[in-house]
Image: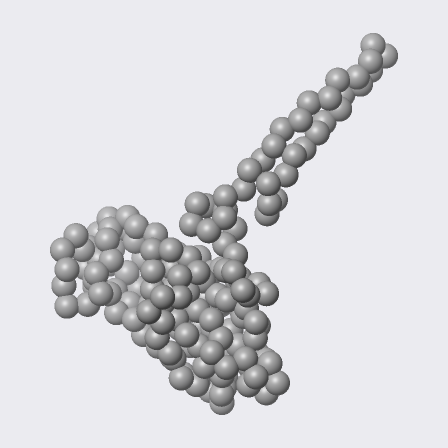
Length: 170
């Protein structure tokens, strides 16, 4: 169920019938329900397993957003996450942010052409030399296409990210 829906069940026998209804409310965004970034055809979500994820895939089309979701553990220390374009000849570009909110594109950084980005971080309750992530907190790497023309017409398979690798302290 991806939207608030009311379900009705009817039971009947020789003595008559009775109907009961229940409404299921689905939260969107960071509340545990589906994530849908406004203004994009589809939002694809990849949940990275903490403290290690190797070879994950985040599919994206030319008008899609992508979200890599992960929750830090209680152990502190340094870690990193890397994401690559699947085609080394890809000419599309991506924008990305790291946030505690899905679909947050404030303060975007651009990742040019093919290759990989690596974001290093520290999991700690006190700031360090890398961006500081708090223990036991959910974070989102929000990704969108910057150049939809090349993604759609030249190498559509290059729109997505593959692999997505995460290494966190344990």
